[in-house]
Length: 576
Image 1: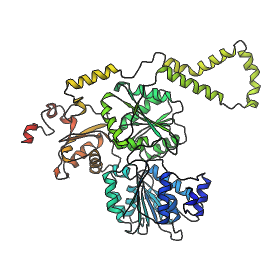
Image 2 (image 1 turned 120 degrees about the vertical axis):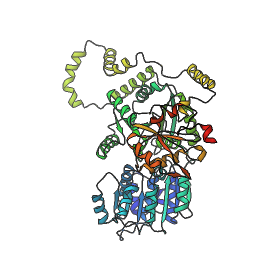
Image 3 (image 1 turned 90 degrees about the vertical axis):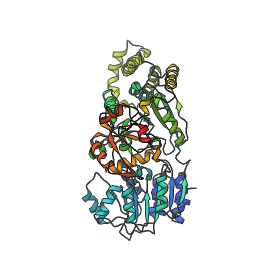
Image 4 (image 1 turned 90 degrees about the horizontal axis):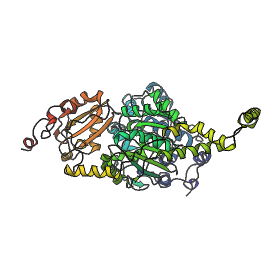
């Protein structure tokens, strides 16, 4: 099927023809006819980069009544970056529709300017949930005429703690409207929204539910934890044309890794929650323009990033939530291009990797960390390719050639090439001259399995028990422990949702989290720890009065005895 066969208006067809689009992607081919012909409620499950914006955008703007100068289409997205990207796309699609106005409203920008834009009139509003909810409370936006509502990246919105905002916004829209929900994963929360707010929705799945895109290859390197950064540098060096994102678990780790890469001469910057909006815009501008090879980011900071042509996603740490891996890897291998997701793991993380494999329905391929000789070879041939493809301005260079030839006349062609290559290439040759093998040997893995066997096959207890005196993963993180565990049926999504909603901080940095039978422990940004604990101790979760404590404050006394739980009672006493 072609776009011109799908019933779209002539203005829209002209716009997408200008963009060079003729054939729709699978999600577009399934969604557009439904919206053009029947205006059905739709749940669309597809990875990022599959063309979801055009799938809902093209038919939606075609249904706008431009003579009515009020919001008719409302699109909610989880982040400012995605909000702006959708706005740019819709403005491009609608450039031949005379008088159609789109307005983006989002946090981190002056609200007065956005209010003035809305007052002038808008047919389409693209918004982040927090800002549009604020505008609704101020009576600065009228949503009573909305005929179509789109929830884009809905799973991300819920993970970021926007559920209450979304509920409040939906309550301001008419009951008789079309609701479209797009998500990369089908979680119970997404299913609940579908049941609550949608009428007989059609579920459209591109690929398998929750599965990773076929265009992404998943690799992993297994190293000692202490060699993680060295392995990262080798991965970046091994791919001379890399344009990718390195994902870290915490803000501090993001800062440290980016600072180390920049110090070592790499074109890298950090993206994390401590940046101001202007700093964030500056970094993202450099990255989008191709002036950075590597962006080092946390999951929170990278949510909603829409950057094309990424060649790699590198997991410096695996995410705690397996579904987050899908969001990470989905940022490469887009628009029909191939992508590579590389994970750098140690032996303790094999179980987490297997769990991710089950979620994404793909197998990770183990690869050795590139050796120094391999890296030098790839960098050398990249240099030669670059020289071979260089354009020569003969008019400018010819006046100097006589002098150049006289200076080099005592050298043969082969000697000139060798010296030129050495001049450009000595840094790699020197650095990797005696580079050690970073790969874990079979012997190391056997010893690790043997150690586990001697401990009863339960692995390293420090990675399993919330009562061990374990150091935080970074200086900026602290750990809260509380009395909700698997026995109460809680999941990691429940825990993250509880932390974000209780703290009231929508971009709360969450690090390592562990759920056990009777308790859970979660790393959070240290500056929010005390107020979070105070609020948690006032909450009831599914009939359980939460008892929360600062893990490290108690690790030296009550937690020292492994037969005692978070409140200092012996487990046998608690059971009785």
